[in-house]
Length: 83
Image (tube, rainbow, N blue to C red; front, side, top):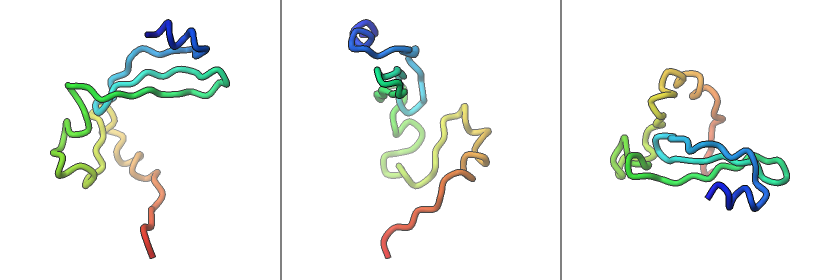
């Protein structure tokens, strides 16, 4: 598969990265932009640490980023829905 992607002009293809909720590969597009391809997997998935009924209620982080939670949570801008 890597050879097919490279044959289409994409470069700098990364190794498969496990992001807990999905696995992905990064590659550089012919114009220079970095592009990520992601798929869910049997060992992870969006409901690997909470039930489908709970999805979206809490801001979940993969274990490797939990120690950065305070810094991460300071970054998002507030969202206003409706009037």
